[in-house]
Image (cartoon, rainbow, N blue to C red; front, side, top):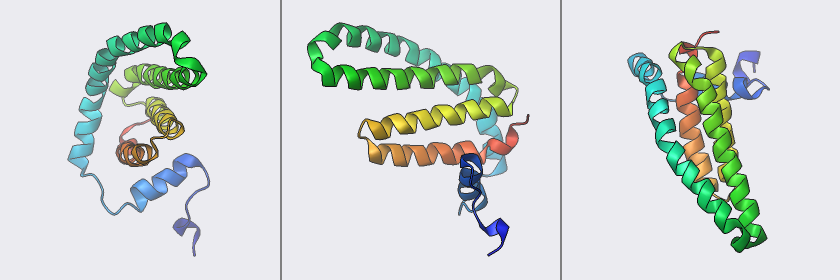
Length: 148
């Protein structure tokens, strides 16, 4: 077995190896280009649409936290922090996504990983694996279009 047949040890290299190099299906170049071109605009719209929902969730959750008991408070707090972390990472990545910066792509990767971890820890293991795999596949398929 040669060195090129083995997956790298770092997370990004490992995921790139299996989701791009060894993937049975590659997203066509023109579709990748469309995803990179319109992706930041879609992310902006989703970010704007999610802000009122997050504010309502935090407001209602804060009011109900004293009545929900310890389990509710810890679970709700964790999921709220994870959701806020995802939105902050997406917001931080947004300016660089328009200019196709690799650093913004990495912020999208971190946001995706936070979402996967939060889903697993909240008990949604199937959704975390399925949604995470699809999200990471798309993210790694468009990675080459982001430059330093």
